[in-house]
Amino acid sequence: MAKVLTTRSENYSQWYNDLVIKAGLAENSAVRGCMVIKPHGYAIWEKMQAALDRMFKETGHQNAYFPLFIPKSFFSREAAHVEGFAKECAVVTHYRLKNDETGKGIIIDPEAKLEEELIVRPTSETIIWNTYKGWIQSYRDLPILINQWANVVRWEMRTRLFLRTAEFLWQEGHTAHATADEAMEEARRMLDVYADFAENWMALPVVRGKKSESERFAGAVETFCIEALMQDGKALQCGTSHFLGQNFAKAFDVKFLNREGTLEYVWATSWGVSTRLMGALIMAHSDDNGLVIPPRLAPLQVVIVPVFKTEDELKKISQTAEKLMAELKKAGFSVKFDDSDNQKPGWKFAEYELKGVPVRITLGPRDIANGTAEVSRRDTLEKSIIPLDSVVREIQPLLDSIQKNLYQRALRFREENTHIANTYDEFKNILETKGGFISAHWDGTVETEAKIKEETKATIRVIPFDAKPEPGKCIVTGRPSAQRALFAVAY
RNA sequence: CGGGGUGUGGCGCAGUUGGUUAGCGCGCUACGUUCGGGACGUAGAGGCCGGUGGUUCGAGUCCACUCACCCCGACCA
Image (cartoon, rainbow, N blue to C red; front, side, top):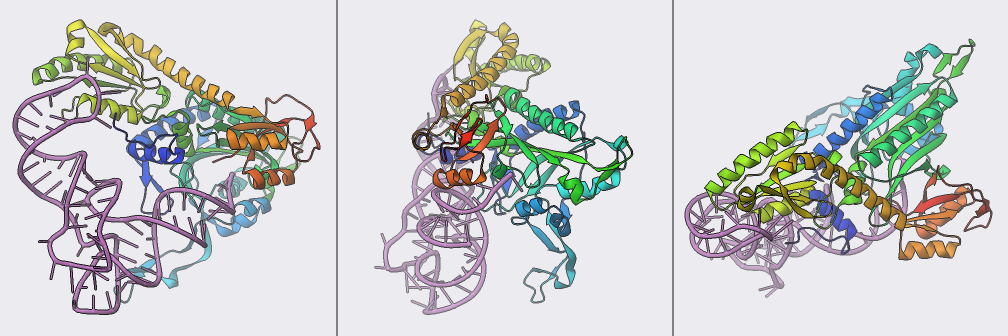
């Protein structure tokens, strides 16, 4: 087969880049750091959105929309939040353009300077809490369970398609509660929603847990996250859910009268996943032939490719294929019959593998004569010849099997690449030779984590919820530690 | 933002110490032969060489500035 992609072993990050572009998912745009999400990529994102949106609504949330622009002053209200966001934001300073007097084009009208600059939202906590102030008076107004699908801008210095772009699409949930317990419960619930989505839709095993202090969201009391391991042994944060305590309520003076008749600050959460999930999806499953998309997120689940020499053959095959396609569509699958005659079958095989279509059905003269179809699965590239009349009932089990296999494969990979280190030397050695997640004891201090990051580039990705209490000693300082944290080099 | 590299038909690239009609492969169009793993032949179409400004009789080639992308750092909720 002609090689279209750089292989993973040659250069993993080049492979990723090639894949995103060649599979038609996205490309770089004329604007630095911003991407164009192409139809195939956007179709996958839409499938993700649809599944997540349903899950949010099932857990009681409603969608709403808040402005793209945030008055600069809002960012100085919450001290920790400013610290985290003050730097890399796009700022609107003027509101009008005018023709250059020399006739050379357009310039910013200096007369049109804004009284107060506007920040293009890097996240919406501030504008939303400013709004919530007007919505909340009593405990009867709570909880507020709102989600927003939006774009945000963070002026990143080095960007990579989907993984880190200056503008990206995401959803951000912002909830308000009467008690700390309820808010905490919400933050944990949404983390579970994310984990459920990652595992059951993306076929991506994730570790649930909390972040260390230094990785915590600016303004949060506690940040929970799901972390996944990519094929190159680096970790990718796939979703975060924050318990914000009363920090934003205090910053925006949002109080409510509780049952006892006393005024209290509102408790908050926020949670989000972004188009970065596309990056996770691509890196988790794909191979040197191209994209591998889990069937539940594949915009196109089945493609039918005819093999023919003559017009007459194509006609016969088309009759069978059209009928099969109609039956498959009726059964709820997304199907395409590619009867174009400008490419040969071999070209089409390679093309649909590159695009990640989970199942391909090949129909040729032999199949028409024998009443069979050749069915091949993208995950293992296995082919089998089955009776034509059994195809429709075989597809669902096959798609289920692919979905399950992708998850199992990724889980096995993660297990094989999660190592235990009991000394700092072991830790460094694993990082140099194998990569992956490293489970190690840590004394719980910011200083130790910073030292490890400085010396090895690895950070604490997550302190897993399911870690057993296990007294030990910090691999760096030897001080006591109550449980292990999961370290890795991250994207 | 620092160091290094690259911008030439849609894509991948060549283009000598500056010299006039800017090449090659893939793709594209037409026709023919092919068609069960990225076919082949023949004939075509498609470029003001990333942008701006300079040096020069003459610039893809030299200079300055600028924009974008890639790699390595710094940064990354």
